[in-house]
Image (cartoon, rainbow, N blue to C red):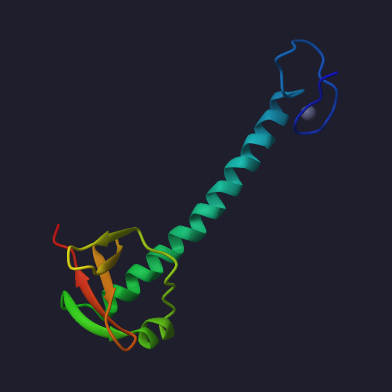
Amino acid sequence: MKTCLECSEEIVGRQDKKFCSDSCRNAYNNKINKDSTNFMRNINNKLRKNYRILSELNSEGKSKTTRDKMLTKGFDFEFFTNVMQTKTGNTYYFLYDQGYYPLDNDSYMLVKKEI
Ligand SMILES: [Zn+2]
């Protein structure tokens, strides 16, 4: 016996059906889409916030700041869009075109990528 993925009612008719009705199929798909968009929205918000903070701290295109200043503004070091390793061994973290790399004493150099 096959049951509907949404309401668990028994499905009558074709064996390849997954839902008892169109409304159950729609309800099920909407739920899946909603979960993934909420998850993505949260990450996008964090990326946008990090980007805004870097832009504020680095209006000149290149500047030095501290970890504390970034954290005070709400910067989240877990979120970035890409990582770049330089030949000299520095690791640059980027939020779109705004990047940073660690210096000594919990300082960071903020840089802007030329695009
Ligand atoms: Zn159903």
